[in-house]
Length: 87
Image (cartoon, rainbow, N blue to C red; front, side, top):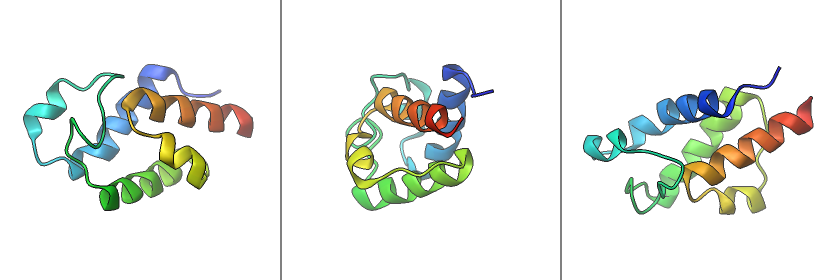
C-alpha cells in the first residue's frame, strides 16, 4: 500500500531538514512552501534532496520531474505518482 499524502510530507520534511539553515522556516512548511525560495535551499542541495527522496521511497525521478519539484506540494505529487506507477 502506498503511503498517505501526510506520510509523504512527513518523510519529505525529514529529508529536507538537514539542508535548511533557517530552522524557523521549517516550522511553517506546508504544500505551498517553495523549496528554493522559502527554505533557501540551493540548487546543488536540491539535487541531493532528490537523490535522498529516490532512496527513501525506492523511486526514480527523471530530470523533467526534478525540475518541477519546486514546492512541497509538487514534490509530494511527483513522489505519489511515482509510487502509484510502481504498484
